[in-house]
Image 1 (tube, rainbow, N blue to C red):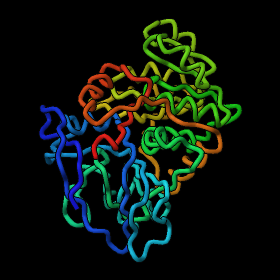
Image 2 (tube, rainbow, N blue to C red):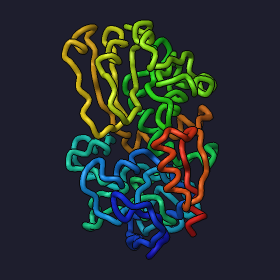
Image 3 (tube, rainbow, N blue to C red):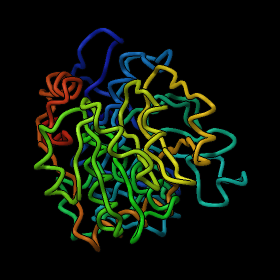
Length: 346
């Protein structure tokens, strides 16, 4: 079937309306009528070639929620009419050690991303800035009814990207967590860490979003542009979640960790992030990375958010506003995630 979409024709041109082809629904496939798609900074990096060569035209978008329109003959997990979501993954080998452990995002044979990946049929995957998508049922998530549908999409990337490290490093009562950056990822990290019971501090370039941070669950809020911040907070945190997609002085942030503390990077800057060995050996600190989450953990995150009343802060836009939205994301002028109303593509 051919469906309406918004695509990047090249790394330097604006996104434009187009049509793309979706595969026929196979025995284990689910056809989803997309209702909303979030805009992630990764979308911008990808279409502008920041992470390497891209096959154009390319439709991005890996924060997808919609309604099941059709299911294959062997599908058992989803029914027509269900509220569902698709995140950053649409396939993996399902046989390697990591896949068998429910961590398909770390598939040793290469997970298939929702866009710009080579799919099982040899085609390039196209993402959620479109009216429909066909996905294997194993990579389709259930979206709880209590999560507002128009706000749910960013949970499929921003939500799981921050939930996964917070869960892995056991944020909770008695732990001190710092969140670097108060953007699309950062505001979700604040909400989730607070709901887990951690004491939460935001480290942002300025104090202009301080009221927002405190309202969303932060206990403290500091400006990293103030040199006194790094002295005042030395040896303070058990876990630092860096959500910024830009180079930072990692040694300075490592100095904020307590004994055995970890700084985990979830932002994805194209530049290298140099770290000196002494910044790690003092206090036996760790510098780690984390990707999204596997399918089981992503469902766990959605259920956690439903239980705790967590939803992203969003701005709903029409499809023809995508290019302006990209510029506003780059200027940090969104509180805190753009969501495309896919009805405007129909």
